[in-house]
Amino acid sequence: MKVTLRVWRQPGPGEPGGFVRYALDDPPPETTLLEALDGLNEWLVGLGEAPVAFDSDCREGICGACGIVVDGRPHGPRPGTTTCLLALRDFAAGATITLEPLRTGVFPVVRDLVVDRGALDRVVRAGGYVSVRAGSAPEANALPVGHDVAERALDAAACIGCGACVAACPNGSASLFTAAKLTHLGLLPQGQPERSRRTLGMVAQMDREHFGHCTLFGECQEACPKQISIDTIARMNRDYLHAVVTARPERGGGGTG
Image (cartoon, rainbow, N blue to C red; front, side):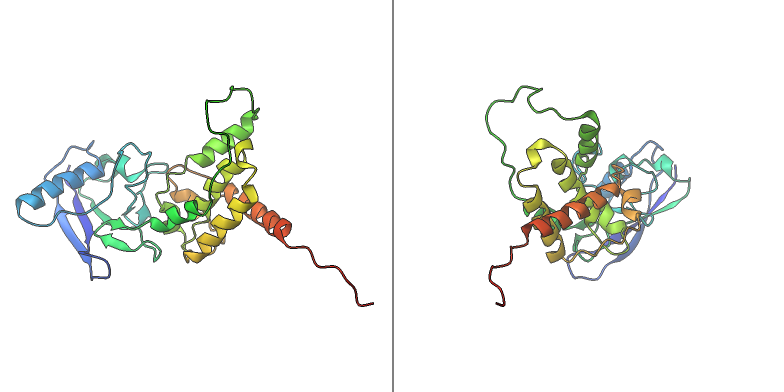
């Protein structure tokens, strides 16, 4: 299968970059996009040139490290599919496939296709701890959780922190990511003691990182490889409003006389 990769090359942060075309030597259609990059890098190293820098880890669609923009879409054209699981057969024969880093000012480019997604880590860290008893595993039925609640919590917990939602959002908002992290704990009994504090902390950190504001375009859920719903954002907004109201200090006593 003949395809051409049009890859963004940038030697370092703040340095100028540009697209470079590489014609692949007829790889099999079942070759994944990252395997194609592996083969390209072997060829480049053999020529004494710098390989294309890109992130990957599990290559099973569960870690989120592979997130890049493929033909203008975070993770590429297949819904619910991470970049690492995207195969060349998903593109037309003879196609030119454009690969570039996640385009958002909050994720600075480190090199080529690699970006620094540390802002997402800092949002999670702002959520703090969960005060559950450490020790042996509790009896399975000690904390009853309804089936519907458990399913919704698991759906939200599927977030892999790839940053595709931020890259797809016209505003560069991280609301879907933050809402997913808040929702899976906010639905379960273990997450109730710190629920309000966690919501206030993570939303405040999201603002400090200069992510854009959510206006519910819905592009985030379309780009999410785990297809997390924007319903989680509505839940986060409700929790945030409740946390702000309940945390408001009471007015002091005394009157005008």
